[in-house]
Length: 376
Image (cartoon, rainbow, N blue to C red; front, top):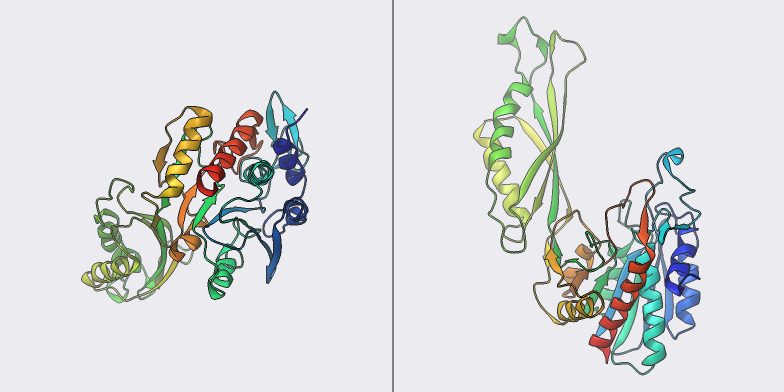
């Protein structure tokens, strides 16, 4: 007999919600949440469906945040079972989204159901912020919902995001922050011509190499106790006409920096300008900031989560800021405390994605205890 959490996770996995399609997941959530007193508001921005559900009118507000969209399953022949037909084998639930992050959403809902049954007159408010635009471009999801909430003065006090943070056992790692992400498209201009007449050309590849070397070895910062040092990685270099005897007229370079709270985006942009100008390059550069760094170093949410994890697993959780970006980058700037706590992340985005059913039930218990710790 499956638990309520495993059953709800299975029902969500069965919906083919490849980003940005919600595929009816939020309708299922609304049915469950409305039954326990949540006011549910569907927010549609372009092709993205979002859900803001809230129980209570007063602060503080504990908001569970997550996404119903999943990445494509990849080659179906490599899956041991249909990725959208949930299957339990040897106590493990398989399916696309099992770890990232339909199981977390199921645990949030069942935790709320159990908590409200015991504490119908709880302190403050409980909310769920659910999007179907996290795995994709993430422009019409959480960021738009947060903007709408801010515009009407509705504040989130604590945001608990169900991203799969754990490494070996649920709760062994929480993410209390994330690095910022800034990317650049650098175009270096030269003069095209025949390789046999080097005095008549200006090779942009040759010009680029010393500058890129300086950028790659530059020490941006030394990090701090929560963040590793900022890292610049060149992800693509493209140039040439396809002929071995033609010097190209331009070279294009893509690079990205994952940066800590020790520096900001303006410092990165200015330092890059200085390095490129030192090499007297003729260039254009376009920057894109996809996320600012954020950190919850202390506070009630972190304390409540640590206590709940210890209570149900016996583990002292390890705080980390590694990995890519999350929707926490849209919530943290509002002043909310933000923490990511979810299942083991070993199988996310892989074929045969899975979650241990026992640990999924433990996650629901942890979420419920966090509610108790903050709202009673």
